[in-house]
Image 1 (cartoon, one colour):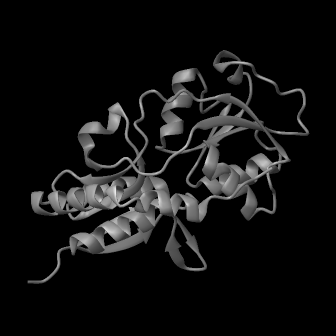
Image 2 (image 1 turned 180 degrees about the vertical axis):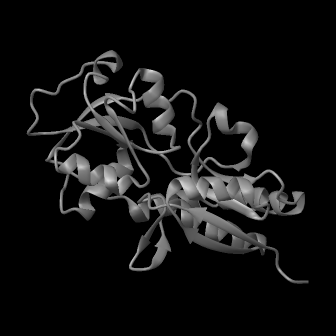
Length: 233
């Protein structure tokens, strides 16, 4: 019997999922890949900008998306398997911008920030009062935000603590250049998950859920987290 084949879309979001010299890797991507092997399901992984990956995962029945924040607004859009690896989220500023010191969420909207379209951050920032025509710059890729932030084109950036530090290293920075500010209290999210199309066959869903449970019990996710952990001063 031929293996079932599904396409798992992903984005450049290290250390959870990213392309390293053309090879797709990362904590959550490798864990999902291991799930597919364990479930004897053929999985093809495709890296795309987040907005397109998010759209295709909803459109194509034999597809999924990793890593996806599970929030109320998305709950009915996918079948969910997880949680996978994630970390807390914060606003950051450049250390050189000593005049930027918001103390709470009410003050952060006094500054400009960058975010990725259709991301969990976009919805949250708009709920705080950031406006696209005023102080909220929307892009297709998080790397664009990093570039704008490091060039002082936007005053703040938001990001997952682990992922943001990992991204800084790709630019030759090691954490000393930035200051962590206010935490984003994302109560609506349950963490990062594998989001599968609503029309995916029940047989595939059950196999992947069973594999997830089995590999979690074996401690495989913790192993990948340890493999990618990068301590930063």
